[in-house]
Length: 165
Image (cartoon, rainbow, N blue to C red; front, side, top):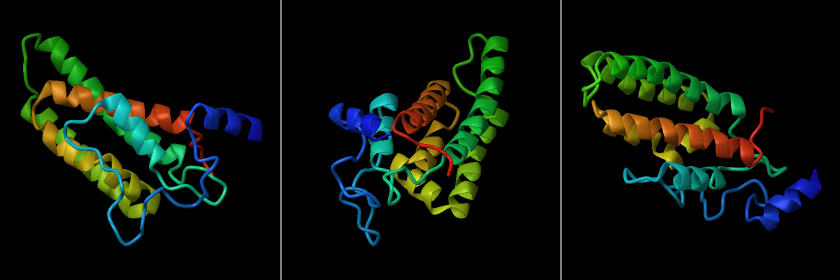
């Protein structure tokens, strides 16, 4: 296990040389040191978000796989409906009112999960997912970008050692 951790540290991943249990530059009384903006890059910013998540005393990411995958599942349900809508309306350049409402409801799903666990709340604040979901409105391209961002967040979470406790 330590050998794998040291290999990740050599590649620039993980917090092997830093004390575990706290984010770099994070003070519980202030805002996070890093927050994603609306002009986000799905892959690069996903990596930064996961790197800035709080770690437990063993250096593990506090956000569990179950917590992050619940949100991915909700996004994928809406994504399947959007894909079907696009297939049926080939020239559509924006989402229907019903689909736009379902996209907005993703924010409610995220807020509910954030209310249940501090790790999810920290993740929500750093990733800025609530604002990004609100920015989608009826824009299909923005929704597809949101989907890629959430997938990248889950992938980096897993890659960087995220797991269930």
